[in-house]
Amino acid sequence: MFQNNITRLFNIEAPIIQAGMIWASGWRLASAVSNAGGLGLLGAGSMYPEVLKEQIRKCKAATDKPFGVNIPLLYPDIDKHIQTIIDEQVPIVFSSAGNPRTWTPLLKDHGIKVVHVVSSSKFAMKAAEAGCDAVVAEGFEAGGHNGREETTTMVLIPAVCRAVDIPVIAAGGIATGRQMLAAMILGASAVQIGSRFVATPEASSHLAFKEEVVKAKEGDTILALKQLTPVRLIRNDFCKQVLEAESRCASSEELAQLLGRGRAKKGMFEGDLSEGELEIGQVAALIDEIKPAADVLKEIWGECQALMQDPLK
Ligand code: NDP
Image (cartoon, rainbow, N blue to C red; front, side, top):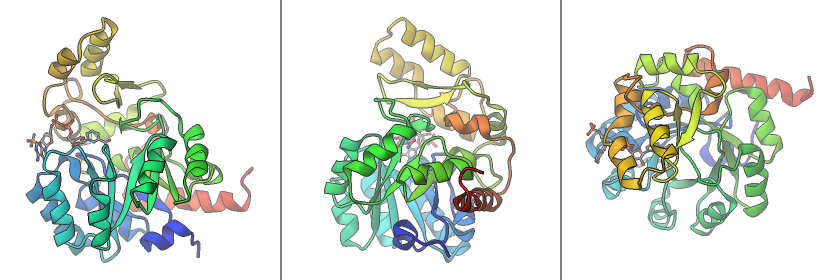
């Protein structure tokens, strides 16, 4: 049986983590991935505190395997989410979009494993200093919130591995076993996969969005809104309005007004493909079908393990 520092840290079989994506990663997806031997994460960024509590309870009922919660640290009611996680004894937290120093010590005091998502070596070192158990190094290819420096996974993984002693989980542009093995050869102990798990029946996203992900080709996503919070999204009508505003150097206020509130929900949860925000990674170009999360995990891990025997096959 395969084992390394990440499978031991989380007590899982396959070193594959399903990203905690807003409007996609509810209890159905997280429990399906955990039951299949990976680590499922609930995406708390789009959940009101009561919703997170309910989702954690449903996830516990659906799996006796470990699962975790992803919290973007800029979430408005962050203290309520943290309390829920402690009260419900969730064993693992993946934090993102914020300073890992703020909540890591409290979570660790409660015996919770903490992993922080970073986009540079500098942030990885901060996470290590804050006491995180591991980092997710997420490259430019990734969907959703992204780093400003545009460092690709190919460059980021070896750079972060050189900068910190804690285990590194690679993310951004990974949806196949071949890509997974490449990330591990670059030094990662595991991979975090988001986009591939959106195109599953278990993801809570709208079917129209999932079908759009399957249809997406190379070049169909772009990193936009760098002036506010950089985000990779599909080039739909809303995105074109953003790009047009950016091309004439619109102010941050105008961009914030154009974005408005609830764009991500409109696109990914309600299925408004024209006016909603459709966050997905570049790797959508390699995703051809919607299929169960367990099959996705088994296929990626199976391909990766087969290639470990003969990587140049
Ligand atoms: P908006 O401000 O546009 O909208 C907030 C959305 O979150 C609404 O749809 C709202 O649902 C829902 N929501 C859930 N809990 C709360 C709460 N306590 N207060 C207010 N709204 C809440 O934000 P976004 O949709 O762009 O982002 C939401 C969160 O997800 C943020 O924390 C953001 O950082 C995170 N995020 C993370 C990404 C990543 O890649 N890690 C990518 C994008 C966002 P309702 O409409 O039902 O009120």
